[in-house]
Image (cartoon, rainbow over all chains, first blue to last red; front, side, top):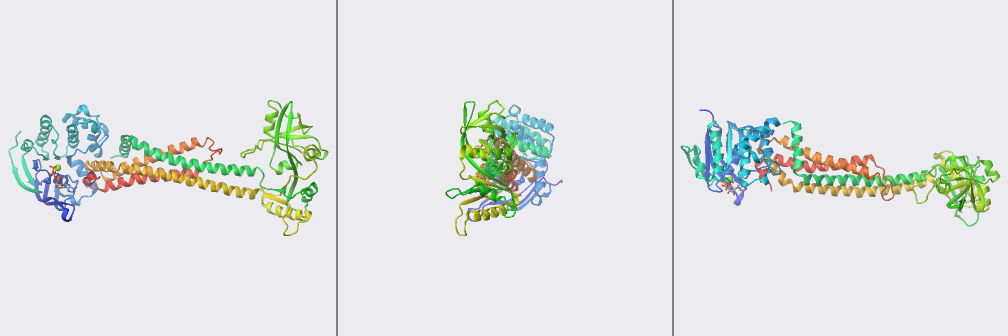
Length: 232
Length: 394
Ligand SMILES: Nc1ncnc2c1ncn2[C@@H]1O[C@H](COP(=O)(O)OP(=O)(O)OP(=O)(O)O)[C@@H](O)[C@H]1O
Ligand SMILES: [Mg+2]
């Protein structure tokens, strides 16, 4: 068996200390093999985003180990982390996190720019990604001129544009109507079929049903972990 | 990522925050321009004072009578040119002066100082003749009624006419104009071109009578001998006028270079004061910049968090924000220098500003340092954060 893309052991995350400390993760162990399509569900505050941020190498765990593609992330220096975030991971934030006063196109181009791709190629690929999420006609709009759902789709396009091997999406359909949700999920299905690894957080059962494996978090612990027949 | 790309990012960052960029640049502009201009005004007034005094000649000593009655007389003046008692004296020019009205062709013109003196005065007092000639020792001895007029007098009395060989009436007597003085820079309250100079004998005869001299202008052999001349003159005068030790002398000796020193000190103090005001304005400008930059730290920190999450290494982020800060402060500073250069072409409170190059360097240096520091520091801090902490920054 090839080595897993994500390999997490006894992960804990505690915010603050003393009596006000919040134990967001209380020992999560999880391995995700290459090509898996994993959905994480759980009530609000159960630690889903916390886990996702650690998986995306944006945050560090309090204790426990995290191996990304076989490499211990805690040993990586800034440059290597930057490289991993840029080349390996596509991250969709729950709060979109688009750069203000910067067009949708420029936002989507950004990861390509940091990858050192030429402006012309970059533009074409960014436009393609925007087209994929149905926003080709909004390329020149700035975030504050876009609806919540449109901003979310720009964020998805930005995560997809580098064609990452690992896509981490924190509620990518949280603000979308059924039709847009369907479009985005079709894109994810396609990526999954291409062999990419996807981890997706959701509150919606229909979204979770599309994945090949479903994990439930309660109070920072994995309570169920089932492989399922994906409903397409 | 190439440097050009990072610069383009920085430019995009600046244009994405136009108001902020404009305000920051304005702050730097005003600070820089204020420092340069205020220092230039101080320097300009110092130079004006210096040139005004230098115009008197720095190697001369002026003897003024202070007592009642006729202290300074012609024999006393001649006694000062004594190669034994006063070896460092190059020339002695007795001076009388009075206000007078010059009339030519029905036009009147009043001059404050119609000077009567000897030919040596022209070189001693550093007052060259521009057109025509000065009068000679012979003119003086014969009491010829000839006069050399100042530029202002020439313009007032002889508009469009060559004044040489024309005759003007002064105190009921006719004087022939034989020369026009070269224009003197006149920065004081008095117009130093509004004057006329004639032989001592003629002026005494016509205007002032044969009383005391107004002053005696003594020229030293070299600027270094001025103080020697001063004491030589003093001892001759004391002897001649019978002044004993302890008495207050009925004369006063003025030394142009002493005058220059005290006046320059005053001007320097003025410059320092203006410089302090300017430094305060630069500081206030700096605080303004700091304020604007700090206000946007939250937003920019979040932006840095996003960029890092998308795979920007710390160096690239830092470079971008440093370039932004540099561009702001360099452009702002350059515009400030430009504004100061334009401003210095105009007279400010009656002073022609003269730019001090070091003030340009200082103002630019300080403003760029402020811009870099307060633009770069928050960026450097944010770039070191984990992306998620930068994103949560409030
Ligand atoms: N920076 C922080 N400081 C302190 N506590 C935090 C911080 N971030 C999250 N928490 C706490 O950690 C717990 C887990 O938060 P997390 O964001 O992972 O929840 P979630 O499962 O993503 O919830 P939701 O479905 O609402 O997004 C919550 O109780 C939250 O209050
Ligand atoms: Mg969440």
